[in-house]
Image (tube, rainbow, N blue to C red; front, side, top):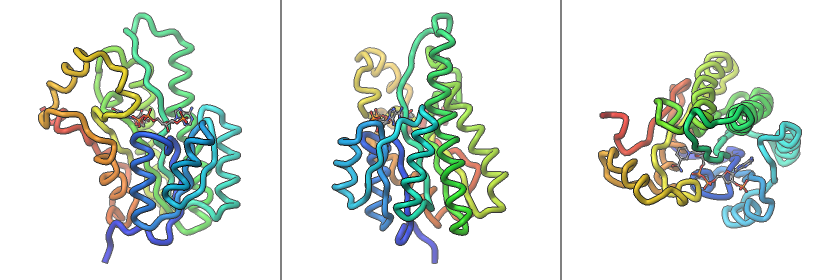
Length: 244
Ligand SMILES: NC(=O)c1ccc[n+]([C@@H]2O[C@H](COP(=O)([O-])OP(=O)(O)OC[C@H]3O[C@@H](n4cnc5c(N)ncnc54)[C@H](OP(=O)(O)O)[C@@H]3O)[C@@H](O)[C@H]2O)c1
């Protein structure tokens, strides 16, 4: 019998202090996992860790030395069976105005940092007989939404990493999947001008933004044994937008 129980599993969630990452950390903990909550703010991730009975380790995922240090600490705390990469920042500008520095900043955070985290996590998973990696990507990395050159390209790179890592690491018992949210009400989207928000949501068949908790169910599924034969997949959770 397989299900979404995470009893006995040890998970690491970057971007776990707020929004989608926090909702996923809470769901993993509620399903029985011990969760290491990570973000740049030591206080913010400590507060979430206290609430869910986990641990907190501060880390800027754009800094590879800090990513390595995060996983050294995770090893000391007992190792890692599940890695969720949810850390992220928005970036929006017409393509003609995007400087190379912004392309690099988005790649460093969303792609290079996340894949380094996966490499570190996978080393621990191999020693434990397998595991699951989940990258939070975005529907804006799946199509040509205007003003998403830097952000969308980094998320598209991450969706590519899902496939490559899934194929390479399957022999180690490590599954690698992605979750591509549509419009979710979090700090990231709170600053969008009202007319743009209305325009974006008008394309969503469910006619509303998601709550962060609505990303937790798909994430829990992909991280759990309920998805034991699912790897290399990016699950779109966008209220039906891409069904159009
Ligand atoms: N909201 C949406 O509509 C939406 C849609 C598609 C995809 N996403 C993706 O979902 C993920 C979570 O976004 P969200 O909407 O939940 O945003 P959010 O509420 O702003 O949370 C972002 C999280 O990432 C952390 N973070 C940001 N930069 C970081 C860095 N350099 N190193 C480590 N942690 C960092 C933040 O904590 P600190 O500030 O403490 O570091 C926070 O925990 C992101 O990858 C985002 O791209 C969001």
